[in-house]
Length: 420
Image 1: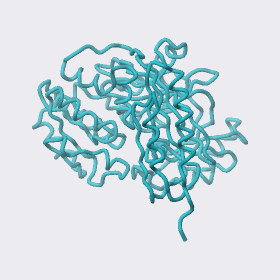
Image 2: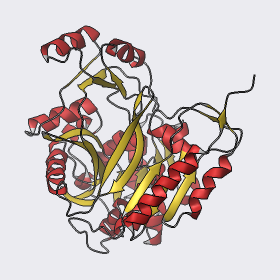
Image 3: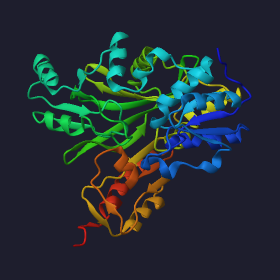
Image 4: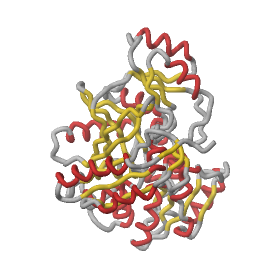
């Protein structure tokens, strides 16, 4: 068995998005961090969040797993962790080879990345799941729809290996169009959709349970409630995300469901967030993302709870501090996602900077400037490229008032038709 080295560097595979927070956090604790890139061509969506200056060494995986493995064994790391979705599968493989004592269960590797396999693992563990089929054959889908009594009902079509709501489409009788439009084509992570997932459409409140796991113990760092809206034909547009108090009545059931699910897919080490729909019949799995909650969430989690997945990872791998089983809510905190209702050229992006003057303002990001072309918000990647606001503080009423102000400011953004 290849064991981790408690005095070695931390290795982060694709340290993008929230995964970029690992390097400064480990460095503050006196631990160097080595980056592994899962390919020579970085996804464009991650480019701005990668800071190569944070790493004394950057290793690029070009398909030769043995070469990367050999170099990491020379470095003798204390851990190998994924930073972003694109690095999840490679991080699993490298951890099995380099830090075997910290690896997730190898035989269940696909179930930690493929949405169809996730649901199958949950079902084997006795958890109720959303009815679904994963196939490349539209006739098989048609037969399944009829057999399940879903004819004429709303359905969801999505790629099994995407993230950030990429490709998630709500359909009914026109499901074939959405199915065939994505089948055989690459998603935003340049993974070809060789099969597609078709699910019944379920309703309820959507939650995300964030954990840091060690030795198969899942410590809950926070639990948030999402709200989403339809934006024209797009059904998976994030509207807001709110941290939920740990004593809220729904929390215990959601956490129990999540921990059983994580066990079912062999998740033992690292940060993960599990999205769960709380329906009238109880929790139902949406998906697992076996890496830190994206979009900088751990940074904002510190304002809400005083802790985060990244902070717990550093404490665990440096043996410096306790890891509580649960979390506290120190400040009500709300992320407000900006939404573009129309496409065109941005004319007054500066108006969004008014968000920074709100009393409960904690942080905000504006991703557009005058002259940029803005698309209609259709998924989380579009949302994050436009921007968001984080409101936090002891006064929930002030946060609610400031939320209304964010929407008022957003409505003042001028987007005009492209010039002829």
